[in-house]
Image (cartoon, rainbow, N blue to C red; front, side):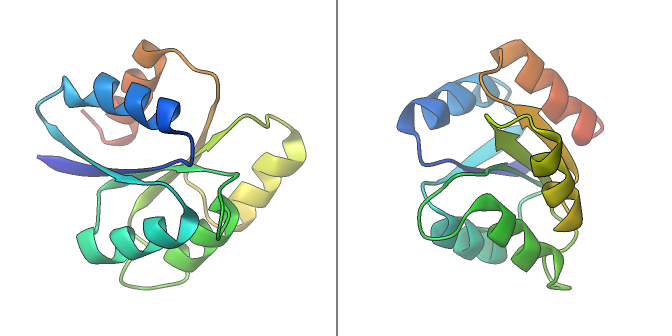
Length: 122
């Protein structure tokens, strides 16, 4: 079972993503509601993939991604940024800090599942 860490400060988004991916018995979903908790969980649990919201309290998603990708212990975690901001500048900033992909909110559950399966090679 592959671990996926979902970091988003919006409970409704966490519920939607968890409900979408939990139906697939091949994923264990871990949740964080802010950037500090996300970083702590990523370091402790070493998920295969992280769905990381850009706008979060404590530390934003860019800071979390930069910290993960600069650490040899966690740089292999696949980070997909969840963002309501589809501007080119945000994508460029995400690439600069090492993000592996982007997924724009709002999203359909089916599109999210397809993205996860594509990223994890399933």
